Image (cartoon, rainbow, N blue to C red):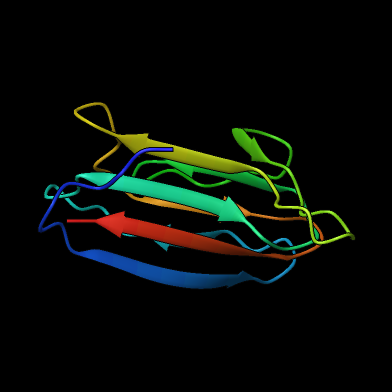
Length: 104
């Protein structure tokens, strides 16, 4: 597990995905230094990257659903100098809930 750099401001956002609706999880940010996206809901989430992109269910980067026993769902973590500065969008056929941590 990594630790965040001293003095980094981290913002946590919980995003509810309405079934079959393309949703922006986090806006583009050229100052971003850390990004974590975790699916805590019960529906599979597909991610797309880029302001003009559209998330398509079953396409893009998949985040597994959380288990019924309280197991964590799929997560994607970017840190260091290799991370997306563009917007991240998500979609879930059944609907789901995603937690986003963005470090600036």
